[in-house]
Length: 418
Image (cartoon, rainbow, N blue to C red):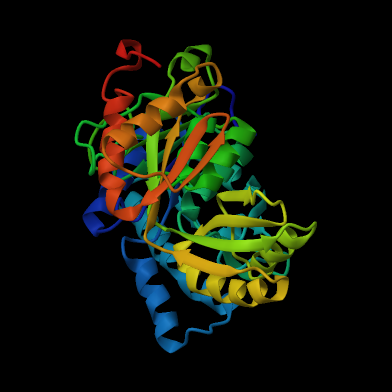
C-alpha cells in the first residue's frame, strides 16, 4: 500500500519529449526532481518522435491489407525502446528505475486491435517497486487482451495509459507533458493572441478534444472525469504551470465560451429525396455502422409534401471514399433520388459550460461568421457546445472572427458576455 505521507505522481511524456538522447536525459532529470521532492513517481512514455510513423510505414510498405494483430506487434515496439532508454538514463544518474511493457503491468484491454480500450490495470507490481524506492517507467499506448495478444490503444493512446495508471494507483496527480505549455482558447498557430487557460473543466476539455483539439486524447479525458483524476497539461521543453483539468466549479459558469476548436478532417454526405418511411434512416446509417464508419453531425429535413426527406451527415474524411461507395448501393436500394458528397469542409466549435446559463451565444456566433461572408452549411448544438460546418477555405478566418467576437484573448473576468 502507498504510504499516506507520500504523494504519488504519474508523469506522461510524449514522443517529442523523448525525441533524442538529450531530451531523454532531460525527462530523467525531471522524474528524479519529482522524486527528490518527496513523491513516488511513475512515468508513462510514448515512442520517440517519428518512430511510430516509421513502424506503421514498414507495415504499409508490405501490404495495405495487413493483419491487425501483427500490426499491433510491430507498432508497439517503439515504446519498448523509450522505456529502456529512460530507465537506463535514470540509473546512469544514480537512481533506481524499472521499466515495464504494457503486458507486464497488464493493461488488460478488449481485442480491438489498433484501437483497443482498457478494461483493467493490474498495478500491484508497480506499487511494490515504488515502495522500494524506484522510479517506475511504463510503456504507454499498449496493452494485452484476454488471450495475451499485444494490443494498441490508437494514436494518442499514451495519454489514456497515463490516466488509467493514475486512476488504478489512486495517484494524487497526473501530469501530461507535451510540446505545448497548456490548453489554449484556440490554436495559437492561427490566432496569435490565443490565451493559455489556467484551468478547464473535464466536460469542456472532453468537447474540445473530441472536436479536433489535439492536446489530449478524448478517451484520456473521459477516464480522468470518470475517476476524478486531477490532470495537468504542460510543456517538457519550457517551464510553466500549464493547464489543470478539474471538476466543474461554480465560477466556471460565468465563462460563456472557454475555447474554440476546428476540424478539417470531416466530409459531408447528402442524400436527397429519401422516402419518408419508418426504418429507412436506420437502413441507410446502419450500413455505415456495419462498415465501422462513425457518423458525427446529422441534419434531416422533411419535404413540404411529407413524402420524402433530405438527409445530410458528416463522416471522417479518411472514411469518405468508402462511405460514398456504401451509400451508392444504399441509395439505390431505398429509392432515394440523389447522392452528393463534399470533402472540402471544416467544423468549427465553440465550447463553454457557461452556455447552460447564458442566452444569445448562437446569435453572436452566427453574426460573426455572417459579417465575414462565411456561409453555414450545418449546425449542431449540445448543452455546452455549438458546432457549425463551413467551407474548408474559410477555417482560419472563421476561427479568428469567433475568437474576437467572444473576446477569448481576455481574462474571463474582463469579458463582456452575451
